Length: 106
Image (cartoon, rainbow, N blue to C red; front, side, top):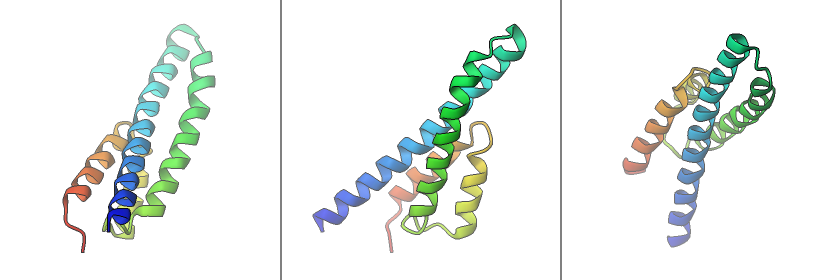
């Protein structure tokens, strides 16, 4: 039983970390894009763009790996993935994960 609780806590930590990291990287990418066009500073996009891309792919993989353990439907998992491609959507998904952690599992 204790081992299951540890695995569950670890799962939620990973889910929170990936959803928050993806959302923050998206905001940073938007700032870098603004700087690129406002002051011709392209380095930000060249650095933050690939980092955000990798974090988004990890986010998608983590959601697909654990959506059933969150008691989410496949439809909700797809919506979460789509929200990850919207600025700030990762923060909403993080809130869903928090709510799923509070719900008793069946």
